[in-house]
Amino acid sequence: MSTKIYYFSGTGNCLSCAKQISSNIENSQIISIPSVMHASPKKGKIEITADKVVIIFPAYAYLAPVMVKKFLKRAVIKCQNVYIFALYATKTGGALKQVRKLVKKAGIKNIYGAKIISVENYVAIFGFPSVEEVEKKCAMQYDETNLHIEAIKNSETNITKGFHPLSPIIGFFFGSLGRRVLKTRFKVLDTCNGCGVCMKVCPAKCIVIKEGRAKFKKGCEHCQGCFNYCPKKALKFAKIKSDSDRYHNPKISTTEFCDYQCGNEKCE
Ligand SMILES: Cc1cc2nc3c(=O)[nH]c(=O)nc-3n(C[C@H](O)[C@H](O)[C@H](O)COP(=O)(O)O)c2cc1C
Ligand code: SF4
Ligand code: SF4
Image: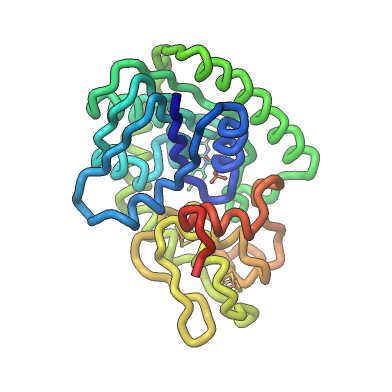
């Protein structure tokens, strides 16, 4: 029995969930959605064959990240069961329903979907969570994930209840315009030493290192990875004080995150 675990992650919460599932499910493989998207031609179909497929992503403005939506629109899934997990900090809105619909459209009937509580990673806006808060939410994420691992082992299916009426509007504005406008609010400070960590963690591959400094291109998902993983705190967001704390999942080191984001190979 083979299981493919696809994840999208900005600050490691979703990757830590993917790793926990993988370590409890035999013959499973973790695959970064960005690495698949960047490796295949822009509009070509993406074939996914396994007995079970797991899709893990963070809720962004009540929907799934734009790249996850594009990935599923191109996916041709051949498997028995699909499991969808939306990590969230406050409310998932319509994220689960949106992804369930796309998986259904890809021809899959046996679907199990659930939201999993996690640490808020939008620290540039909501501030850094306390050490206690990080510990508490990480423990909750771990416990909830364990429950769903049983569901995967037992080939369970379910239905997705609940929907936020504002999800399509909020999600649409964030996905189509908001994330692009917000990207322009990142400022590279003189402390940037061109180390390239931001470039490696970026799921959208929209950062390059030019003349020893990070430079932003088009396509940002606003995942907060570059801001939070930068070892020099050299990225400033809007008017937020640049020396404020940063967050990334405590179980996912910078090196490990870089490697997974680039498709489990050492990043160039
Ligand atoms: C741009 C952005 C939008 C977000 N929108 C939501 C949201 O609508 N609802 C929610 O509960 N959490 C929201 N979050 C929080 C993330 O979903 C949550 O922290 C998640 O665990 C991050 O996963 P990651 O560490 O794998 O990137 C948002 C985070 C970002 C960066
Ligand atoms: S991670 Fe930080 S220091 Fe390194 S290149 Fe990016 S912005 Fe500069
Ligand atoms: S530029 Fe930064 S915020 Fe935007 S997708 Fe890349 S890592 Fe995420």
